[in-house]
Length: 402
Image (cartoon, rainbow, N blue to C red; front, side, top):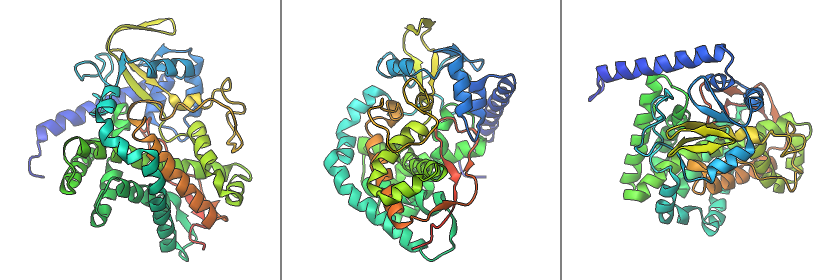
């Protein structure tokens, strides 16, 4: 047994997580679309449509208030009365939130402002313009390592995740010798954001804990202290999966759309448009979570202080009142509303510029170097992942072609 392990605490937490998963499964079986979202689906968008049909906001049987309405979401994200956790740091009393349900330290809007001097230099336009060269080198180096190998490969393990971790690690000053460990820790922490809503297995929860502690230790060893250290941990647990899944979701959509990958390969400068369309069509961050710090009226509904609200931001991108042909992935969209992905919370100013920049470069390099990329099987998705969406595996042919 690991030093410091507490069997009693593990038993209590494991039982609570198991009960939460069982309750969500039962509620989903009774027809609650939000509970079904918590359980996980390869394609959650029909469930989002069912949530939208219940009105601009409704009370789920799980205890949360849920909305897929773009207007309501935009209103909440601009209202300081809505926070990541209650005023005392606790979740909504009526919502049986799983571990980490109290929110993520540093994720509140006022924390963003306080920490701005620590994250702004990393993601200002000049810094990211210089960072593009680093991302390009990492992409080309990764493709060189797999060139001439087996033509059948997993895009996520072979390209998207290695590029995301190497690029973000370079941005945050991770020493080269520590990058393999950094990649492991980021992968282990991936489910942290999902655990805000969906109870994870005990072993995974403990792995998340160890990964966050390991990232903090790694940055401390690299010389970061205080708020700089905290910012680097937060960017690691958010920007790495956002970049990897933004690349994976974009490639999957382009390969599924007739002529999509060919169009990008003919004109790699469309990578920026591909990233923007992915953020609308199938974003790597699907939901935002807030708790009311005070009583508030929303879409004609009174919500109490402590009310727990889940905003399905990904559903806004498939709203036909905002986007013509919402079910099609199109590189030629113009003058449409900005996606609500990356609109607030942990994914706002610190994460969005880094993830978008890195994904744009990774897509452009991949399209230039691998124009014959093609699917070789269906993607595989994690279950109980209502916040972070992207393939665990994306089988393709042509990744090793030079």
